[in-house]
Length: 205
Image 1 (tube, rainbow, N blue to C red):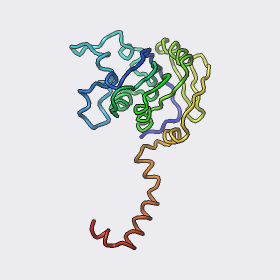
Image 2 (cartoon, rainbow, N blue to C red; image 1 turned 120 degrees about the horizontal axis):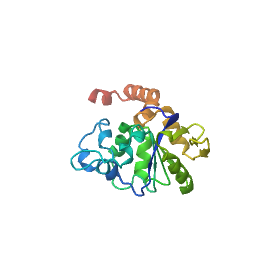
Image 3 (cartoon, helix red, strand yellow; image 1 turned 45 degrees about the horizontal axis):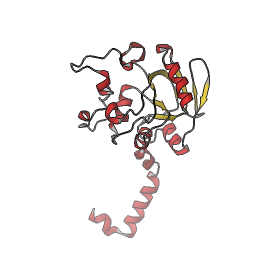
Image 4 (tube, helix red, strand yellow; image 1 turned 90 degrees about the horizontal axis):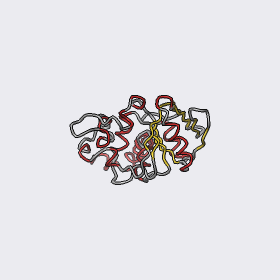
């Protein structure tokens, strides 16, 4: 997956609590196992009319936020059923960071495995960023993962906490497969020793 080091982008405000995974990507889009192509369906029930036309009031349909890379949301973001398609859809749309007072655990962990940075902040800090995000195309927010800081459009800085291991994975672009491949030499050494001492297992393969 792509590394996450710094991000400077438009922040879109979504001041709703309990945004569940079915709101992020409805169940009818879960048939695919591809990680691409889901961005068009992101928040589809809030984003589109029944005839497929865009709802002009929804934030991501507004011209200032069509290229948003940061989402500022309400409490308990990503609750509901477990579906990795939710971070896939966010990422395919272009969202690399979600800021909220809290996240559902499974969604939170899935974000890190897909190159998205979920940031937990106190409600008052989220409120400040939500207010900043109302500025449309002027709502540029800068995120520095190494230094764990968020800089708002007025230059104010907010610090955030993050698990050291999850931070390492994002900075280095390591998903579960990438973490395994870091041990490639140890795995190869083990396989070579096994083949030497238990050749019948290798022959059986």
